[in-house]
Amino acid sequence: MARVDIVRVDTPEGNAVRGGDPVTVSVTVSPDRGWFNDEKCLVIDFIYADTLDIATELTVYQNDVTIVDTSTINFAVKADSGASSGEYYVQVKNIYFKEIVISGPEDGTIAVFST
Image (cartoon, rainbow, N blue to C red; front, side):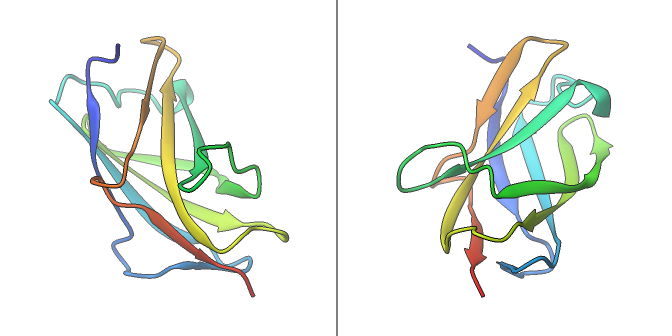
């Protein structure tokens, strides 16, 4: 079991992901135990909210993850062609701590609209 839980997934710009345009996403975990300590240790995936399968059509834009502080990260997500419209959860794996956390409906989701 992970030492932290995702408590908030937010798109600060208030945008949904459309086509190939990247949208900024912020993910916050709690309690603050230094879980976000090295970008190189983080692997981010996206999960279809309705099926709970990994969504390979969503990616972190340019593999760029910014650590805001030890409990919050920002990154841009982009939808590749073939991405389905709907809600998506965020899965973050910290390979240093060997832990995985996954957001849920109470944490916020990423909305995707296919074009």
